[in-house]
Length: 198
Image (cartoon, rainbow, N blue to C red; front, side, top):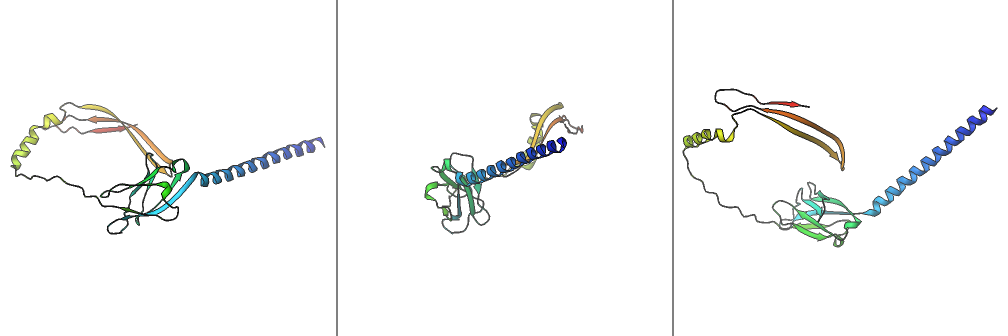
């Protein structure tokens, strides 16, 4: 009789702890979701060429003075979530071949914005092409081999890192230390380079 009473009280205690935990977790998730929508302002729009009204593909859209930003898609459309603490800052829009444009976040609406970028003319310096003797060029390149390549073998240590991120979270990180043997550059001697990965 005492054993069943003890078992029932232990079961009741575990059940109470379980219900309390589930309630707390659910309330925490609701709070996170509510805070997520109140802490950010989402701004949508399209980046267009001011002259042709064609979409500017893969234009950079960023919050000025921060490292937060996004890129417009293949139709020129973008969506950026701006934390409320940056609501007084400006959004920057830039792309190669266009002048960078800054617009205050408060002047943009949340649903649809058309951002026009003005094409920028990039001056290119003139190039002078001269005819040189190809044999002389090859001879001077061969003469500079001792200056550009070591005649002694060298051992070097290198570091390699590769990471894969999705939504600001690391999915995979791979790191390696390399021992590199750089062979001497000598005429007539074949001395292969070698790499050891740890």
